[in-house]
Length: 123
Image (cartoon, rainbow, N blue to C red):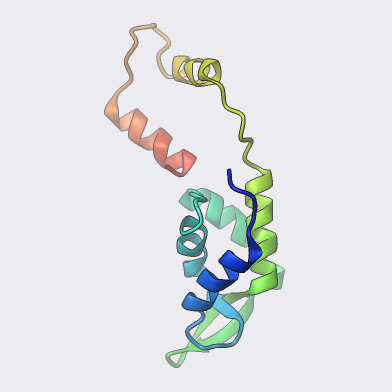
């Protein structure tokens, strides 16, 4: 994973800050993170948002009240996500994970299982 470049995140965050009030709607958290090589799954995003629920704010966006996140809280969320993802996955680790879903050692897993796995991993 890349190290966190706060200035680059700020630039992208500001593109999503349509109201110019140092916030983005919570639904834009994923796209901003993905723009910087992070790929949280929907479940991971929900867990992260829940973890920072008390720090979210309510903002008017196109006359609709939406949950939003301020930049500093967003960066704390990003750091929490990055810290929870180890970066040193070896080929042996991948084989070990694969074997969990291939108990008969056929060397194959269904495309449905593979798709579910990739989505769960945020890929």
